[in-house]
Length: 77
Image (tube, rainbow, N blue to C red; front, side, top):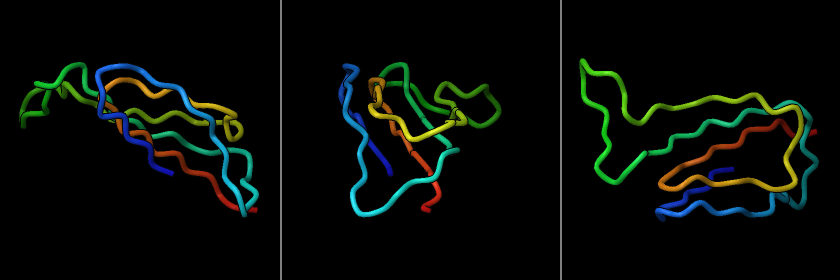
């Protein structure tokens, strides 16, 4: 599931998937910019890194940082 927060404020939302049962053990890949002017330039350390976090189970709710894209991956039972 992908969730985009294009605003400059953090937001919270419920995480619920209907019609399938998700397995425990997933991954969150997130890219979040510190500001609207941040970018990644070749040969320089990234200002906007992609961070991976292992998840033990599907969350009941998620926090979405400002200016971010969050990709949640879980296998289906």
